[in-house]
Amino acid sequence: MLRRLSLRDFVIVRALELEFAPGFSALTGETGAGKSILVDALQLALGGRGDAGVVREGAARAEIAAEFDTPAALRDWLAEAGFEADGEALLLRRTLDAQGKSRAWINGSAATVAQLREAAEHLLDIHGQHAWQSLTRPDAVRALLDAYAGAETAPLAAAWGRWRTAAERLDGAQRRQGELERERERLAWQIGELDKLAPGADEWPELNAEHRRLSHAQAILEALQTALAAIDTDEASAEARTAQALDALEGVVEHDAALAEPLEVLRSAQAQLQDAAHTLAAALRRSELEPERLQSLDERLGAWLGLARRHRRAPEDLPALLVQWREELAQLEAAADLAALEREAAAARQALETAARSVSKQRHAAAPKLAAAITAAMQQLGMAGGCFEVVLEPLAEPQRHGLESAEFRVAGHAGSTPRALAKVASGGELSRIALAIAVTTSALGEAGTLIFDEIDAGVGGSVADRVGALMQRLGRDRQVLCVTHLPQVAACADAQLVVRKAAQGGATESTVEPVAGEARIDELARMLGGAAGETRRAHARALLGAAQQTDDAAGRAKPARAPLRGRPAAPSAVERP
Image 1 (spheres, rainbow, N blue to C red):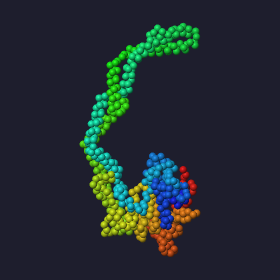
Image 2: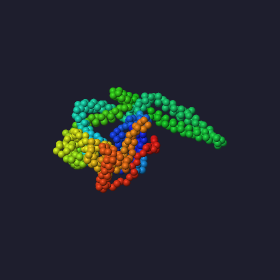
Image 3: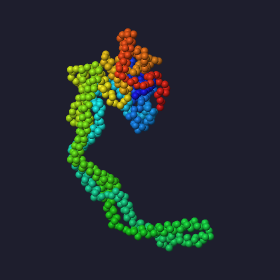
Image 4: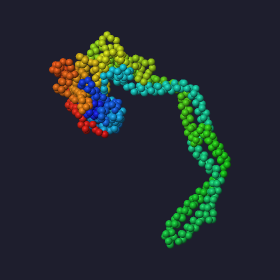
């Protein structure tokens, strides 16, 4: 439920804060006073498109804040999105500056406009005076019917996507058979070349290392011999001289403790020299000139380099290239396997038809029920004898949305042939039909607040009484806000707000104030027009009394609520960033 709406510098509103109550509230005012400003503000707060034009002239930015009760369905979403829960309240806030830049917050944390729109799906449904226009579009008709039927269409759309992918793969393979075969042969020949080489994953660096060693085998052999002689085999080798130094020091170390440290260093050096000599001797025993092996390495390296140049790759990339070509060849062979692709496409088509038939069954079951419910609502709206139809036409091929198209058809009075909704000429009839649809389907959504923006346009007389009664009935279960010019509708409301426009300080400003008692009688009398003042006021009292009696006769349990209030917004009413 909508609790509170705060506006600052929005269009022609300088500052305003309104509190809303449960039940049915009517928003009235002179033509041109700006009755739809509140609806426009709510749409912006809930992620609607906005621009710099909504900023009041001379102001830096417009601010809109809307406070709702937090629906249970939104609590998990808020937690997952990182928005802190503020008790039972959900605060949505948005600003638009004079340059058109927009910012948004949810419970005081920065949010995106897309997140506002996602939250809006659980909070508010708005039915405009041209709602019938959307109902001429097949997708809107189908969506409304599916919602009424409780049909889950996501699996159908997924099955359609899988079938389209499989069908496109099959079609592409059929058209490209010659090209695929030539590509397969080219890849097979290239793979055969590399298979002959059989390049190992780490072979290239190992080949180069071994080739460098054998290329310098003579120099390595001479270096080993020289090093070994210097360390161990010569009479004046490093190991022999170290042994002499140790003998000399060991004879006197007991007389000078300071010699113990250099003595240990020499012992360590002797051990390391002996280790080095052992290693060099082993290496010398293994070292030999291998001209045959060196020639073999030259040939192997030449083969690597030749294939690398041919395929314009670095030699070390050849193993990975072979893996890549094998994968591509496997994909080509799969693409060329028409029988497998046909089986895949057939299975996907079967799954699509199964999902579509399930949805189609639900649609065909729900269509006459929806038509009957809307037809019944039409009888209450001055269209006695009229009827409403939901027509399902089979499609030649399955589509993402299923096996049939959906269309609303209507006959405004008895004896006439139902026609497509777009071909109904009367604006009044279209408005009443849209209202009948809205009333019938309003319970489908989970939003706690319904807004009707002059959806009763073109309605008058006794039909207006019925519209008011319908709104009153809706208000028993949901919060309803209706922008209306009909006194019969406004009289049925639990609360009434009046929009007034006046010049102040050289500028035009709009205000919204709740009215009750005599002030409400005055507003209803103004809406009635025509007769003299006292007669008009008496008629207004009669309207209000009749509406109250209708509500009481319906046995309505009045919802507990705080009084409706409207006042200029205090500086703290809208939290600053």
